[in-house]
Image (cartoon, rainbow, N blue to C red; front, side, top):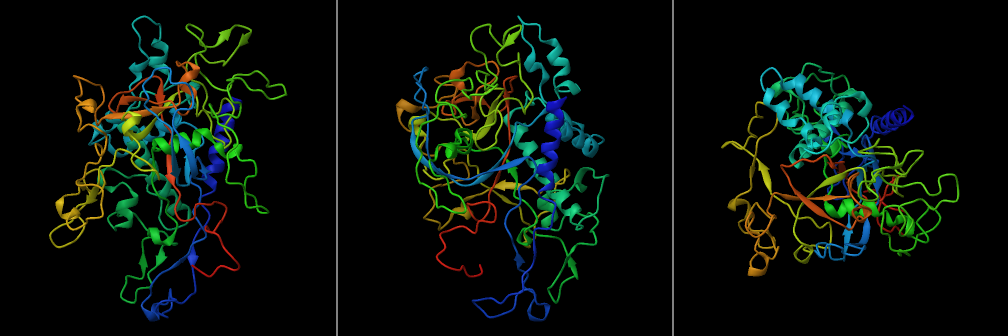
Length: 504
């Protein structure tokens, strides 16, 4: 009970951080044209006084930087699938914990209220596969029946969710967070009866296709020919970017939390050292041990939920080691230097990337990612945005040749970039799925190790893959959000400033 209450309190704190007003009008003059901003008598060009991005519910800030991505532990499997290389990762936000059963049940409950009457298949499509717990030679039926549904497991990581389901949850969460921001700031009235095409999504709201009831705090339209009031847009600074799965580089960077190995980290009084003193094998600070080395009452306790050896899932009665047979509460074990829980053990976690062996993976050295499939909104012949679909979402389609014509500085030639420079043009690397390999464009990376793994898989540099449509009792997920604007946090304006900084 203590852990559950802690989880609730932390979630509430995270939620509270986004609901204060984060934008207001700026009285200014364009330094390029001389025209006033926010003046309805001079055209009404609307410019917000943006103080910086707010932290969304459940997230913690991760300051980006350069790190050596790749395997730092001995390559026991001899796969050479994560060869070390230097990469840079942008600043971002990451979930403090794995997504838990209670969070995912909130999602399926909302789907049921919105779609059950006319589209029951949408709820069925989202439900976790509880049979992932079933084994022919183990008695796991209590987990099949109870794990996702029973209150005892509320704050245990959701499992049985495939990669596509995890992405759909991220999309739903993005819309619910932005809807609540608008409600809390008086821009939109509550609508507890959203069904089918009338559900709120961030895209349909900002494009004018969501027919909710405006609140008294709706934005004033400064356009002299406007309607008087208008919906809030992204340029107003209130709405947050989408939640999504992390890239492999982001996940590995956040798990390592090398910031604690900086000998002189930046403060208000000092610049900070551009150096990392020691390599880390695990997310915590101790170089090799899975037990804490702290000189206090916690000394010797296990720092992750994993299997110590064959048949040893939690130790001996009266002296249990990780105190968990299967998964454990998402707030168990010591968080890393970024404040992230269970970046090693408990469950493996889905990331965005399509899996390829490390010898052909190193494509870009800034925000590396394999898996792009480029899409665009659908427009009618008259140039207007196509109507939303029956589930309330804007329709999308893949980009085509017209979007690429004349763009000679691009490194892609079509909508599907999953195979770019992956080495399969030579006979040595032919990804003939089902015949010579289990790797294809549906193979997605999982990271972190689980309750059923040995310590080797707890190192952030190790990597495995699963098919995106598959699910497991050892795989869950957490979400991230892009950091927009400055790479720094706490109202850091970004860049190196010599003297007083001008507006802008």
